[in-house]
Length: 579
Image (cartoon, rainbow, N blue to C red; front, side, top):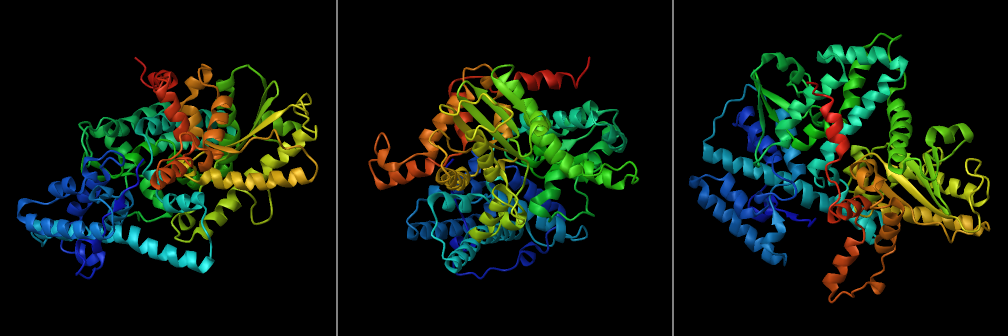
């Protein structure tokens, strides 16, 4: 995906001093502003026709504002020429600004405000407000980042530069709707099945079903799909509305909407993520974020369960609900189920649950096919809003290290856990596989993550560098590490989405991991074939080498024209709609 540059306030209005958002948006009704904000959020983040600056301006401005729009465009053309870029490298819509625009209006503009401006004044002021947010997102952030870099004295590697550039907005810019929907639905279904099998969770589930007015999780998901259907079927770039004909469904949707009593500004838009639509009037709702509506199915489910769990009597409340989700469900049940389905009854296999019973500190899953062994470590973790959005790279990397290398108390995390298990294998001390061939065994470490944000370009390279440093220590202790492969990060959605291709063995996980390692993780520009014909081509090849495994595997399966809509999705969804 080509990264475009954002059109900022100073580019279009070089002689004008920026005002505050409140000044720009005053005198415009809340309804008008919210509708505009949801309209911005309805744009396609990958192939929007409004990515073209002229197309956006023609859509946004009425005929009476053409002179204003033309002046702003000419200023932008002059700005772009000085920056030595092409106008096609710039775009106005930026999903981060769109989310902040909506969030600001929802939290700060009263329902009592009446429109006092003309249509032409509203267009001009909302346009300036949006470019103000772009200025904050791009220019102001860049200045703060430069100051932080100068203070820290860090010299960025290409991987670090890419991570810093993209991580703060990667998860709501880079996604494919079919993949997100498929995985959200299957993960929610799996999570409900898991909870239903635990006796102490039954009071919570009963209270959950009662709250939403459904008999069971099948009915809950079926009714939730009614909300997501409008997003999946949308055929134009604009705000999406839901119009109910039957008032009986109103109460269910009302419990998933952002109400005027709630504040949208929380940890990385967590409220918007869990309640991504709002009520316009009786029986009429408007989608805030199409992506968040789909992600509400699973990603928002824990937060909805938690709210109900917190209100239960003490004797019925599920203790450690978060740990139950991140460890027992994500790191054991979900991963165990998925990998056992991919590999079937082939090879030497040990699930996380089996391994925990055999030894402390075991991997979360283990597979060996002859001399080839794979060690899986699973982490259902997030990066905080403060670190995710910080312009200081050292803040971001420090949290990465705490979550994936070693925590504040010195407890080993993913990288060190994998290294410790590799050491155990190389020493012949892995009681779960006493027949591992010490002299010929090849070891592949895999880190499974549960959120798309860890697919950001550069992440795998950085984490793998920490892993290789730890391997060096094993080598210095006298162990032969020559057959230990690089660490690859895989998000669980990518495994789930491509499960049928991997099950069929038309694409084998070991083979694609090796291919990704050689073509990406171990890419060297000096050895590139064919050789780059220019410096620009060389830079492009180097950037491409930091592509995440998820993009690599998705593209490989699609190029091979293997199944893109999992049969499992169709089979499981059919059960929700009994005849």
